[in-house]
Image 1 (cartoon, rainbow, N blue to C red):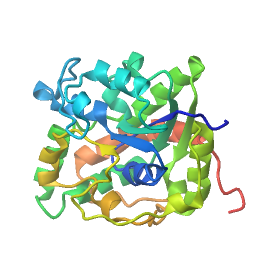
Image 2: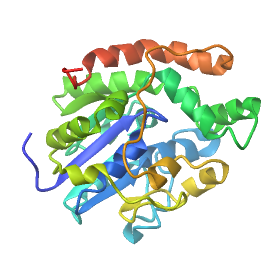
Image 3: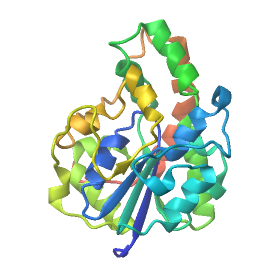
Length: 281
């Protein structure tokens, strides 16, 4: 795919899939703007976590976007031309199956990770603050777990393919093995410019985000309990180790095991559809 003058990339993913660090990398592109999980925040901020069509969000970093609904998200991304490139990262399940919300002029990447590692990483994220039972209860209540986003990603992929919309599946484990090849593919596929320099970046304090990012102000409430962006902030590159081929599930909470059992078949189907990298390995 040739480079577009105004490239828009939407990354659809699951919690704890290394997607925030990928967003950090891509937002290194000059004259780019990054949106962090606008639909996900709307999905979890309504009364009783119900998906609301008119929940208002204060995106304080961009004055003209102070009041957003789900419709505002789509319209604003489709019509944003103040920078050459727009990159959005979101949780696939936050659409609630309403595919009319997908920006029509965006290229879509579906970023997957083994569900056992997703849930393990999510549990560890809050490990220092609250005990196991409270962690699981908090995860299930605050982040509507288990929400089975790999199921949502598989359905989303089918919709995009059936409607001839640009979509590719990428396994985040490949980012750990060969980040340059994966990032180069994502850029070429979406029309973003690629340079090797974008694979490294300046470390920031853990509570500071890049200046060209927009996040819902309400995410500050979550960051009191845990900081899902900390690794992306303090990192300087893709420092991940590849996930193991097998996972030890002994001792894992039944809620987490249920999540893995329900999600694994969809993940395995997506794995068959993923972009193949590093054929020389």
